[in-house]
Length: 164
Image (cartoon, rainbow, N blue to C red; front, side, top):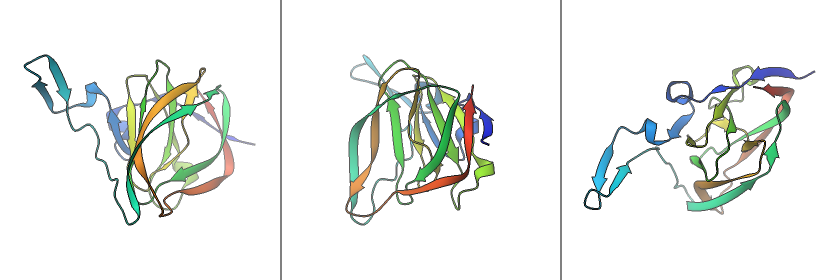
């Protein structure tokens, strides 16, 4: 029988242990550039993208639609680097995380991110793949790629059912 977790709104305070929210509203360093024609929302995420055999990589992930309620059976982490996701569409998505260290299933948290919020997972933070709500969506992904293994996957002992 799966354990049920209700998703809650993604906020800067609630997500701080896991990483950064990439959004204008989270910015503390706003600069006027290009002769005042552009606002630069600067330094939105603390990126860690280098390691032996790894280099920064920018990709687009195309994510299938996911319906709630739904069952989650595994999480992953990138022990050496951060991984940032910025939605390119107008749909909300789920952010499922657990703290760094050995996976503690009782510590899993679920957030609903709105289309104006990206996330940056700190190195070692457990997370689920992108779960776009109701419609397929594209995400700009900033992470590391290379010859060094940098992804641990772990099945959950008890699946979780996600509700809104």
